Length: 68
Image (cartoon, rainbow, N blue to C red; front, side, top):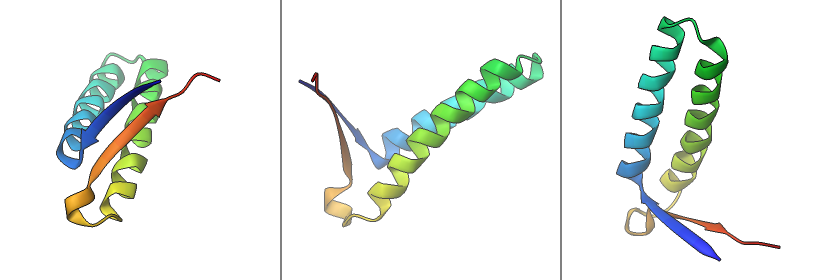
């Protein structure tokens, strides 16, 4: 089992970076790649939204990869 933790600020940094990459892909007319970055950004955005529902002292996302 592997886990990765992200603070709210780290998630916002990741989202911003993905949005920049999406914009670059759109500028280069690579719409498939732009869609890929948009989808990733939305996934991290959903995680960030869930963090905002938690008390501020507990705002850390622990993502766990478990092999079945």
